[in-house]
Image (cartoon, rainbow, N blue to C red; front, side, top):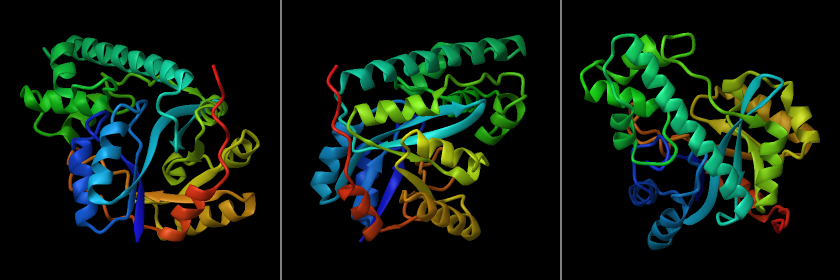
Length: 276
């Protein structure tokens, strides 16, 4: 059996429901999946029920956007207590910042002569953690762009007219928050962030693992991160980072984490959730 430990649903910037995600994972022969929506755990209860229905093991998680000395890094949290008050309080703050970011992006679009309204983006997103993909889809839906790729290229990429930086917390704080909720903290897709020098720093801050297999990692990058994980005695994970159909063809099933690595993650000692 195999696992996919990096997946998104419509509770953040994916397009599939948790039920559709579980059904597709089962069809592809996966044995376990983790839901890692951005800055939310809202979909975890539904995903857990859907996985149980299909005989899949489920890992409740999230993906936090963090930084260290100006360098962006994404931290995946696994096996979280999704009702932990501190976790929910911080996630609510991140979600509010995401919503304000949408309003600012739309305001910048308006200054470019694009008549999009923030309500149109929120209605399309229909979640508490909206992001740039929702703005891109709204631009396409309302006829301002022909595709999401065009929307990003013209307006939403960094240094484009409607780009607005994300709200980030420190990487050490992200790790602390995940540990406080009884979870394990894993550095997501390091090959996309290009800040490998952060790995030993984050290890000192309590990092538990590295996502070595990812849809956009080359074989050479995977080998490099496996060696770094061995050197730092970190757990290794992998996932497709599937967003449904929002970024072209679905990539669920293209990354298949070997069951032995999933079991090591599952059986690794986890910090006890701290009381609030």
